[in-house]
Image (tube, rainbow, N blue to C red; front, side, top):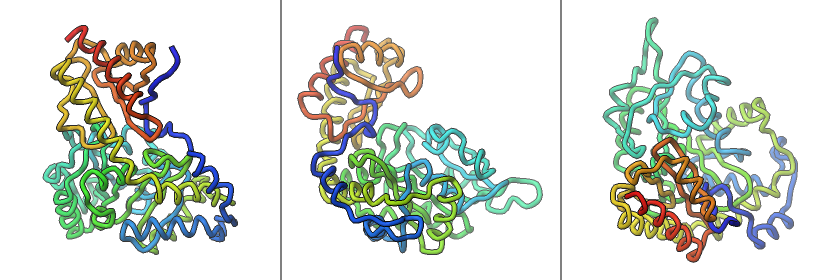
Length: 348
């Protein structure tokens, strides 16, 4: 059967016709020289939204995260985060491979920030015999946690405590737009809780490529060096920056539709197969199902649903992830709910 609803990730979106037109008309220059006016406009826009002095356009979210970590930690120092964090699970050990950074983690349900655990783990000055903690990473929203939104009060408490001992905070805000839309919290309020913030344009916002790293001006100047060193120097990239600007103008508020569809799916599936999901845990556009509660393995369920045109992603043997985005409408959602509901209900 042909694919009806591709819910593997919100990275699968395709540029709209209006976005393509904006890209074609973009004014461009050489970004390595800092001369692409559209890139400069995007960087200024994102920096202002996040309440930081400056920003840098990056080709990928992983590069934005890894450059952010490198600004805070060097070889032989450590970064701490939760055990489901994207920087640990999905960036292929880049912090160790490229920067010599070690990592430790705490276990947090659904990726929720555990401030007490983070503070208890920190060793700001390890001296001659222990690794020194240089940075804490927080992910908001949390991908593998199921789109979890981190409470602003927790973020502020972490920021205050780490600042007192000289430990930095990096916010992996790939889906920070979703957190802001879901809660009404301003992006600048979230941005104020971290020394560096990465945000992605090519997930729910629908741009084809790109992320942005925001920080103070001095760190962004260092980040420009690290971007080039890692092979991320780009030339007439205003064509892509224009897509990001269009997305910020037209695709942020509509994220609420993705959230509503994911929540509706969660409520329907919870009724059919109790235990697979708690709908109140579905904060944004990501639905993670504990399919083992209905007698399935994640790989088996994802494969069977795929045969019926509903694509998903097994995050581990027990859990399957389904992500809503601007290319998934109500009829597609209805089909996904029907297929998944029939499969989950057959063994529940």
